[in-house]
Amino acid sequence: GFGENSTREVFDEQLVWQYYTKERSASFYAGKLRITLPHFCYVIKKTTGMTALDIIANVVIMDAKAQLKSTNLPIKEISIGLGYSNVAFFDKYFRRYVGMSPLEYRNS
Image (cartoon, rainbow, N blue to C red; front, side, top):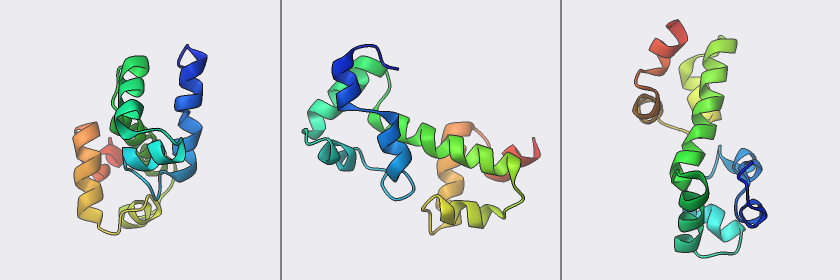
C-alpha cells in the first residue's frame, strides 16, 4: 500500500491492472479518477516517488516478464496481448525498462 488513505482514493494499482493492456496514458487514469492530470501526477510522485508512467510501465513489464518466463508464446503474441500492434515498439519499451530485449530476458 501507499500509506495515506487519501492516496488510496487517488490511485490504486488495481485500476492499472484493469486497463493497462489498452491504456498507458496518465491522462486516462486521471480522467477515470475525475481529477486533473497535474494533480494526479503530483500525488503519485509525492506518495510513491515514481511517475504515473513508471507505475503503468511496472505493471506492463511485470506481465511481460511473467509471460516470457512461464509460457512459450511467441514474443509477437505476447506483445499483441499487451496492446502493442508493433513488436519492435514493444521490444524498445521492454528494453528501456529492463535493459535487455524480451528474447534476451526469456533466455536469461
